[in-house]
Length: 109
Picture (cartoon, rainbow, N blue to C red):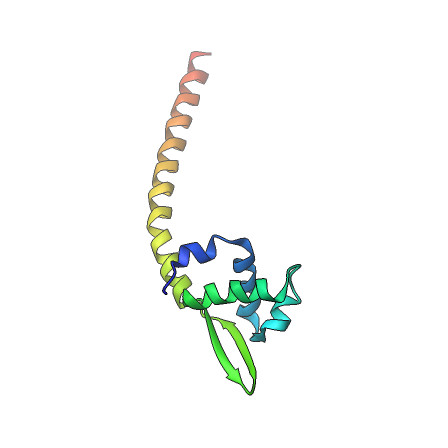
């Protein structure tokens, strides 16, 4: 089952796991040691991240090592950048309007 990337990054714990695994690859036990939750709970988060393509799993002997895969996050960043441009333009227009109103009030005084 392929999950939605936005569903995965909506959870603060999963975002923290992505950040942790961006710096190093770790087995689930070491990932879990960074959080105040059970190892099975962390495993569920890792499963969701794997289903979304946000982590890569490499087997080393009996261990499964996890690391972040930023390619899917790049897709999210590109999608969000379109809306950043939209809101920047709207906020710039609002700033201009407020400045004009402020100048008009000062001129009346």
